Image (tube, rainbow, N blue to C red):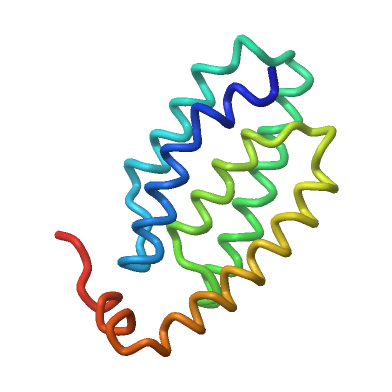
Length: 129
């Protein structure tokens, strides 16, 4: 049953990726959608698992907020990373941390490379209203 919440979250993650790559912003309603999905999937989890996920999300948010304070992360990124931790089974934290680190490095490299393309560099300056 661990996969069902992630399948439900997939469209939200696609939208988050689109907004973040296109506008360098993650709308609050997408973070809220992830939180609503987590609440809807609570009956699939035990109390211990819920507590572990809430603790992990709180730690990620606190660490991310400190990075935000130093302008190293955007606010939407911090909120979304904390919300995503709610969907990671506590038994998979080590694997998730390794996979997330690789994905972050690959994402940073891709954004830096794509910013070199003149057409794509211009698109990031126009944000949605």
